[in-house]
Length: 467
Image 1 (tube, rainbow, N blue to C red):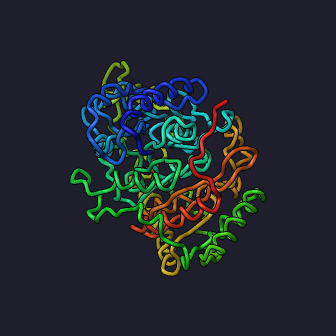
Image 2: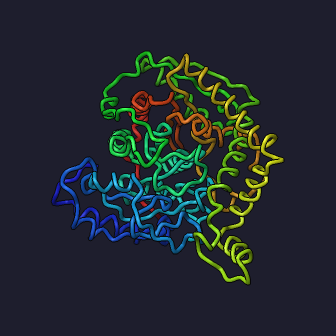
Image 3: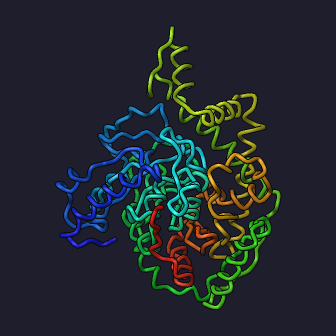
């Protein structure tokens, strides 16, 4: 990502122009941000000096429209920067776009944004994954070398797999969430995309650190994560998540993964098959939806057209709120709010919301047991390459394969452990990734293993020409 000073203006203007040029094909941008003013005020030095970036549209950017992919926030212009926006500016990054996302980050397809679906650069008939799909598409298309996302279930790591790039979700509290429009506060993580593990290390050095404006952020010292790139995986103990392997029906994905495992062993890693309780694995998705929907219903209760959000006419306050929320939110969001509100009713909390929290704890405890013996959990990031957009609503896709192989990465949101996806290979000309999850605060170990995988596959700096 390093720039030469003479190249900075040209590079940022080129990225801005390319994002606009590809908009008709990718629809990856909600708001374009002209870099001229930022270039005129660019601070000296910084790890990201003059690097063009994109920022997911749920991250506050002072004076720049921030919609979180929802019509109800389509006229929201923040009066302050999120902490990560401020850090990026101080590091010299230049934002050229606010990226498309699933509405309010509630989705895994990037089809629910009020500006329309984002498209995968490798095959525009396919989805990017979500909810951070716009950011992923811009990195994969070579528009920017880094983009910010957020990850509540797998919203950075799944699009990274589908788009053939690196996607990182650090430990909960490693990066400040101040100024991020929330989805589910106990699960939300700031994440980001790059095209190499090295750039992922550099980015975390910029973003990580304590923030007094976010009480959940940690005061643990920020490591020099790039040092991990030179470490060996000799003796590193890796647990293959057998439940996922067993549920992947695509034999090509399993073959590709097994070949990677053999090469990791040859490089000196100790790799074993490890199975969690099948009941816990099948409980991941319903547990996630219960907790996330309940927290989302609470977090967004103020988007009513009176306190915040686009206001619709009505005869009284109740009608204004009803009309504003009905027209302001898409059908998926309205449904999730109904489910979440139901789970938060006093009569339902014990048997729905609190029960889900107890199951979450069982899953987290199972992960802790695994990490007593292993340094990393490894599995394919998805059972397949990115699905075609017109197949997304096919009920035949709702199988055990979908429920386990496609949703297990939410485990790391339950636990807050660091997790990332790196490219593993290609099928039908489209990429698919592998996911690593390590114990809390072990990002350096995660980067060491990820770099070893990157070296084995040779899949670094991937980008594609959009057709």
